[in-house]
Image (tube, rainbow, N blue to C red; front, side, top):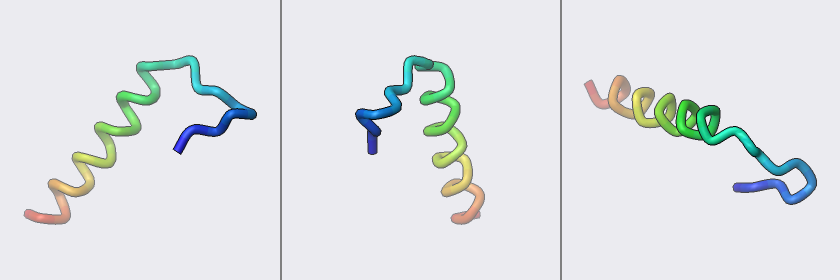
Amino acid sequence: MFDRDEPINDPIALTFGALQQVMGAAIAFQ
């Protein structure tokens, strides 16, 4: 999931990305 050549140093972006996936799944189940 993580690319060693391009490390992600922005925890907020990571959290937002994960949140989008969770919200997408929640909408799909509604």
